[in-house]
Image (cartoon, rainbow, N blue to C red; front, top):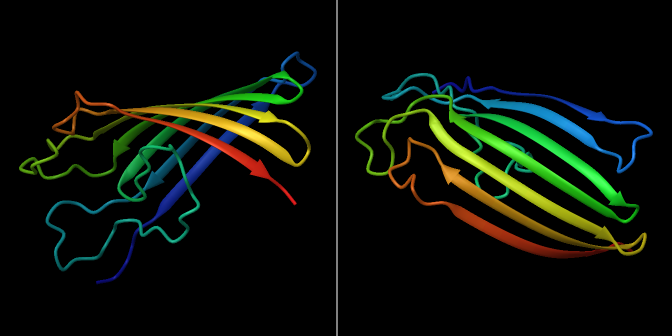
Length: 158
């Protein structure tokens, strides 16, 4: 089978100059193609992830058959602290089979909200706290369940 998958990433960020707390806003769109149902023996149109460092949400990050809208914002309440918020809306590029045991055959994949706090203790040492929550969309059979994650980190640069 030939491969005809493709991906698109487009985004913009705006940092407010000379404003207290250094706020910034961002908007990004990612598209990764997917195969249609019953595509046996035909050209493969699903995106094949070659670069795994292209990460979106911390909980839900499919690398094929997805359309992602990301809205982000950040601010620095003090010189050493950075607060960041990322909201993701996920939609499937192609519907799944309605007869699946886990999916209903809709395009709504879900929404995610990630909040992070970074404290730069020194130039070489920083601490981080990241919390994420994912709400499955109407496509998933278990869409009344949500996933949460909290991560702490420490980074030391030599």
